[in-house]
Length: 168
Image (cartoon, rainbow, N blue to C red):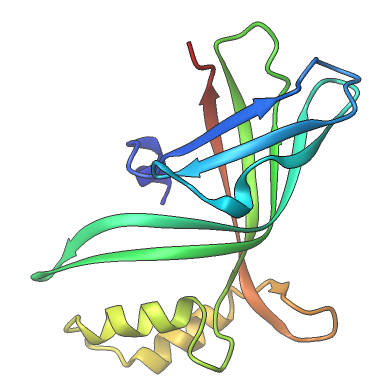
């Protein structure tokens, strides 16, 4: 995933409006992922900290990992992040600024949803000397977030540091 972001294969374009610097009370953030505007991610209210950092919280952020060839089949994967937080360092006069994007990816909802469904399909197309259930058991050790307050950990935390450049 890091390589896909670094290579520009996953594109996240953020448009911030209403930013007046440190002490500003509210900004709006709109995101386009891989060139596609997602209606739920347009004009989302964010807040500005005393030092000018912008923080926006989203209920979801779908990230599609571009196709890679595994065997003879091209495979792509969409990670549906939930409970997403984006923190953009104070833009200032620089031409770019760092941002941190973090959230959770549901592993298995028990009803055919979550990351496991995609992984199971991918594993089925590979000729591996290990059973998919063994991999599922290994992945269970990575579950570190709850999707419901009282439930078990059923999601994997995911984060990335990215660089946003100012548009000309």
